Image (cartoon, rainbow, N blue to C red):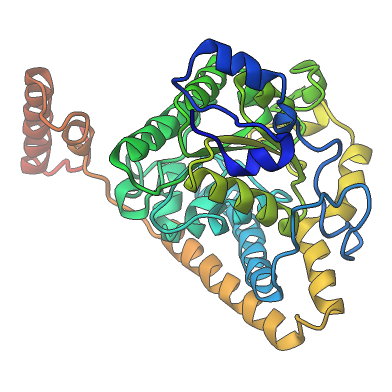
Length: 400
């Protein structure tokens, strides 16, 4: 029987991994305090920008260094500017759709800051900021949102999966990569993002159950922004919290203030290192809020009030960390100006790239369906190529 040292400190008993007799699992079930998330979300910096103590400060999570928090603040500034610029480009007709993460940037930033370059990130459609944090260039990250290209970037180049729109499907893919890494003896950790709505999907159950049974190095981060499009959390689950769902799988859960970058870095960092050291998967629920509509196609005033949104404004992760760093003497005008300038450079790259007109090749629709085109695709490609050539010969041009 293999035991996990960090569990022994809490239970005084060995906790079995996958593959041990059922009787051993039953014995460990009686000592499962390590599975239970904190009673309130872990918080290290309060909404008013002061270092937190007391009920929401959970022992074992240390405040990250000033250097780490300052770097994180710069990434929050960048993430906020990306959201603002993307919203403007949607209104200008340069993108068909954009799922904003305005107000949720701390979750995005912490997700990629907690990982090594060799780790993998699996994102959702709302996680563009996290994807760019992995090194994906602005235009690569936004190509698919504009509809110009099939994916936008090579996942293997960045160890970052393509953002997915179907809920929870990426969780299964993440578990597969984590399982493969374990079989190969790699120290890779896989971090998979999802929203509260995804926890109502069957794929969520299958992914967490497989991850726990096979003890894979995966961390699941639920960005609980209170709504699955128009459905509030209270109509999705009556569990004490979404983090409590991990108990049913034998997986430790944790709750964290999703607007507190310091707490997120501490909690995710702990979960990632635990997974890297053989401790198995973990489920983290970040309590945050979707400040803007689900997408630009959504009318959020149909299902929530302006007063509700206003209550979350003072909890802004950017303003919270800014005040803490400023009051502690770590953030001056020079640093703030530098972060703003760097963010504006990225915004300009987005504007220039998305404002540029592209000339799509119609034959691309056949080239990238299969690595080896089927006879039907080859025939259809030849037919379209012939029609395009005929149109060009007659001077009509364009796509027939």
